[in-house]
Image 1 (cartoon, rainbow, N blue to C red):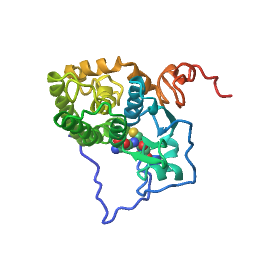
Image 2 (image 1 turned 120 degrees about the vertical axis):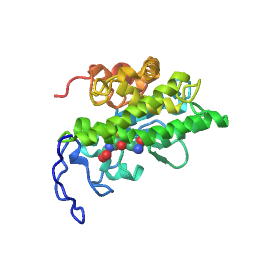
Image 3 (image 1 turned 60 degrees about the vertical axis):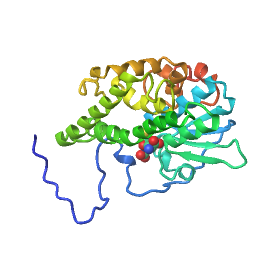
Image 4 (image 1 turned 180 degrees about the vertical axis):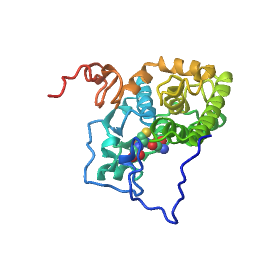
Length: 291
Ligand SMILES: N[C@@H](CCC(=O)N[C@@H](CS)C(=O)NCC(=O)O)C(=O)O
């Protein structure tokens, strides 16, 4: 292994220089707002403040699935939060989510707005509100929630660990990439073994556990995340690929993946969603270029 540079941590860490690497400009060691800005509010009961990242997509897929089932109360406005510009540090956003991360939901259907942050909390909130995609029978429910929280505990090793050091860090550190590649391959094997015996993650029904895991691990085996498909030999995870391909055929998954998306083909990007018809009329290829 290559020699690492001789960094000796000081007695007390201080924030005195940008850490380097992609996203360094939004990293801060303190919480709270940096500026005053109210959040916009649209006409629907549910207001989503998000971005089309793997964590954001979980929620837009869930909302599109609920609408596809006929739950009109799941109509939503999806507002774009550009985290690279620091929108998550506006005062209105921080009031809705003190952790300053997308996705964040505000339910305005009742007498008082209800804020919900953390993607798994949002998925559970919506599943319970509409009675869908979360089994009620105790064993099935336990299996679903176990996999949902498996995703919440595991994905930071994938994104913050592997993805960061493989794709974003300013220098390639063999020790860090080895450590997290090992863990991510182990996680993929966990999923592959599960999906060898089960059609969906939690059993024979499609649930919020599938919605949470798809954008992270499905995206990884499809080669969308970190350009790491070859490096991680993702073709080895045949059952994960079978499952991801099947889910990606679902119309609601296709729509959900377009919402708040700001990269990729123009026809796949619907920056904001305020009406079901926006998928046909407001994707980036249909909007006049800004002058
Ligand atoms: N555990 C959180 C993670 C959310 C998260 O990390 N969101 C990222 C984008 S995927 C974010 O908003 N980053 C902005 C920042 O760190 O300032 C969840 O699942 O909702």
